[in-house]
Structure formats: C-alpha cells, structure tokens
Image 1 (cartoon, rainbow, N blue to C red):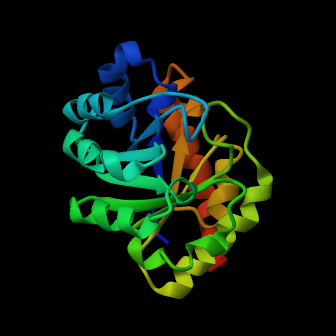
Image 2: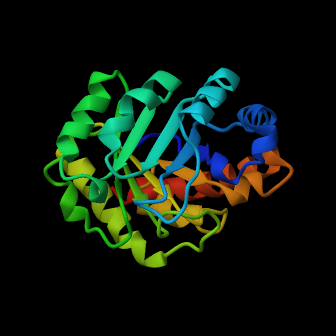
Length: 230
C-alpha cells in the first residue's frame, strides 16, 4: 500500500461552466489526481464527458488525469483520450470481451492502465489480468450517476482485492469510487484503498480546501489501522 491516501476529486460533480477555476481550486486545496468520468449512454444510462473536456482539463492542471471509461468498445477511443492528455485510463471488465488487448493498448500509448469492477462483479475476475494493470478501481455504487449512496457490502471485496494485490507482489493502486465522504472514506481505507474518488463531497462544498482537508484528516486517521491489516 502507498504511504499516502490519494484524493481524486471527480469533475462530474464540478460546475463545468467554471471548470478551469474549479480545477485550480482543488489543486491548490491539495488534491492528488483529477478524476474524469466518461459515459456513453450505452454501457451506462447517462452521457457525460469526452476527450474535449479532458484536453481542457489538461491545459488547466498539472495533476494526473484519471480517466474512467464507462463506455462500450473502449478500444476505439483510447488513442483520442491519450492524445487529449489522460495519464490513467481505466476500462470496465464488463464492457469488452478483449480486456487484455485494451490494457495492452493503454500501456502502448504510454499511459497507466486500469481495470474497473462493477458492484456485482466478483474480485476473482481480476486473477488473469492483474499483471496487466497499474490500477484497480472498485465501484461502491452502480455506475452512471453521481451522488449515489455508498454500498457497505463492497468492503469485503475491497479487502479481497487488496489481499490479491499484496500476494502478487505487483505495484498496483487500489482505487474506490462511490459515495465517498469523511464518514465512508475511512472504511474503504481500512479495507485497503490507496486512492479515493470524491465528487459531491468535494465539489458540493463551496470551500474545496475544507472539503479535501476533511477527507484527508479522515483517511489519515484510518491509515494506521489499514497498515495493521496487512
């Protein structure tokens, strides 16, 4: 596990009419990554951001852009997102029949490759792709909409993925997204998460510094217990 829990505000919850200002604000407030949720209206019942927004974010911030592709046929769009400035691209295990090919292409493009698990997808599905990824993203809500409530039933899965990563000896980040707040984030950190995606709890607070500081304090308090679970 990483020594520091990284916080990745999700711009799905940002005021997109002020995106540049919002990004500068959260960067100054101590965000570690910027999370970008991409939805196609097919894999999930919503449509959101695309390469143009990623490119705009890239011009605004020097933070790593963590792009979560909730789309079918992701292979077709990997080059576009890479060229737009994504640093990490994560594809859903459920969205493609050729997951290894997608992950290999992301790395060929010089980006970090991630795989995402929907709530219903068992952690065992990672077994044959773990060596191909730099990040595993476990969703603690159903994908497609922001502002949903955290599913506590996902905690055993997070812990199981953490154990799988640790046993492998590989350097793989474990990211969690869905209903994160100062109350729920410590639970996923104790279960083994390295990276916390937070949308409404950051951008829903006009004081981004206060919001990120609260998440940081909550996860740091949980960290010693998480380290003791290894």
